[in-house]
Amino acid sequence: MLRSWIDERTARETRKGSQLRRAREASQIAQHPFQTALSPSIAELLEQHVLPTAWYPLASLLDLLALTEREILKGNEKLTMQLGVAGGTEALKTYHKAFVRPGDPAASVLAMHRTWNVYFDFGELTATLESKSSVLFVLEGYPDVPSYHGPMIAGWHVAAGIVAGSEGTAAEILECPWKDRSPRLVHRVKF
Image (cartoon, rainbow, N blue to C red; front, side, top):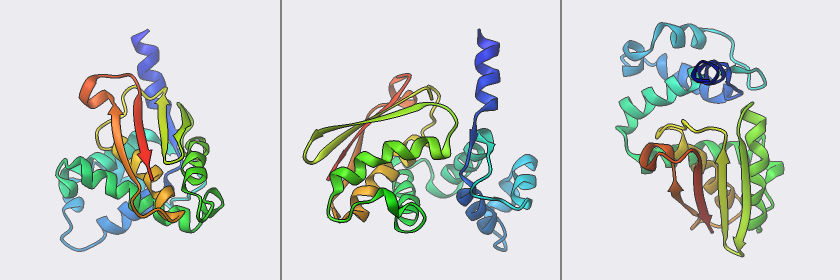
């Protein structure tokens, strides 16, 4: 049983090519701390031509996110969520703008559950409209979501409300593996 879970974990993939490209750009800046902190496998991956439509090992993305949290964000969960907001804002203003309904943050935030399988080949993200100004997200099937990825996921959902026109959009993480050993990530987005 444990062996099959380990095999499944290492087999998971992601299409976060845009994050891989940004990490490559950051690692190429002279004297950047990433240059010495990159593992050989990550350095090799960053040397490749990274495509946003190709699948890459999830472990590679998580290694980059862990490095970013350690070297730049210094373990600050709020900054990690803001990184998710920044990435989500860029995506939702450009190549994912079809998910946003200007002037309707509720519909835009709700639509974010459809983006999960665009990027990840595992897990299930559900979204429930709790009120006219609140959506509850539950991510199951990713029981080991780390502290440097969970807040970024919530940040993407916050970005949807902001891009739709609700500047005061915010998220609250209610359950997560890194704090309370929950097998799921549960967060609420208010706008």
